[in-house]
Length: 129
Image 1 (cartoon, rainbow, N blue to C red):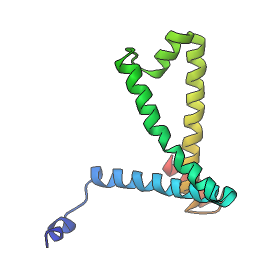
Image 2: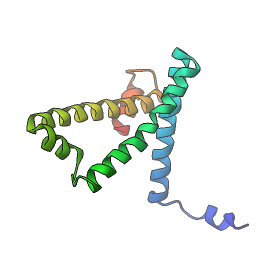
Image 3: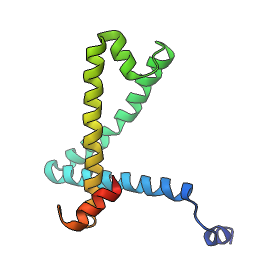
């Protein structure tokens, strides 16, 4: 009975948007784990699950760089330690990685709506990018 009044109310953007985003991430993760599991068996799935430990390690490194060494960002740390050329190369590598992640996500979403390179697939790519 306590849930009923909430269920009748409208769901706002700030409730729906994070829910959709998290669902999208899980759908991509499940697909990636399934593909790796198909190629490499249980070790492929376990290996993909292990990738999530990178979030914790990146957070720890970022925390230490900010609190103990006073860096405001990772590119600034690279620049101070290795010079501006290295910082530029690092930033290009990050841009390349981000570009790949965006297209990876878009292709996963698009695969739910049509065959690769079909009209529906391209529409889904455009709308999810």
